[in-house]
Length: 252
Image: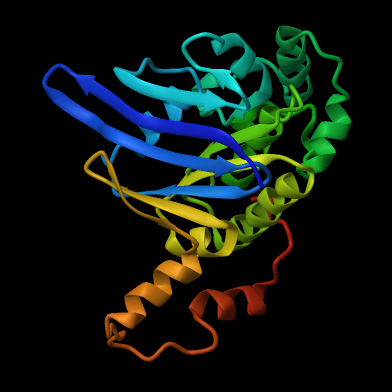
């Protein structure tokens, strides 16, 4: 697969503080790529620069052949960015929000069909604030699809969700990839990254300290002689919980 995102020697400074310190990586077309790291590592800043939401200090960013410095509007037209709650108009229902965003993109969108993709057609007349946590995250992902993007950015999409909502959102993210989208996610959940991502970059203190497939990174650790203190069983407590309560959508 060819690279759809190329980041070369990316630097972001705030005065004397260097938040991103010469990061370089590529994202392959059609993959789910994860940026992992502790709070303050620089991963969200990196994504916001690629998304054209924050200016870089130096370096080069190429998205689907478009240079960030020369063609930011062309990049905006081919990406979908997950919005936070503050990005939605409080007095509009879900269908109206989608129609409004479609107008901003100058696109014709079947709002109900789009809501179908995230299992929210029955909430079309509800306002965003009336949704549960899982529903809000699914609607947020639906809005990233309005402009039929080639690349979707999801910043910690499952934070705060219950196990059912989290696992179902995983399936939705996999479906986005099956539609032909490239997906870039940040997450603090390592099991999530291991389940979803073909490759991950681990960022710490503004630098990439590892970049590979989850399996290869695990094998490299095991090769050092690492052993878990507790024996790993074939199932965990989350598996018990989901087996007993089911995996269906929960709309509380």
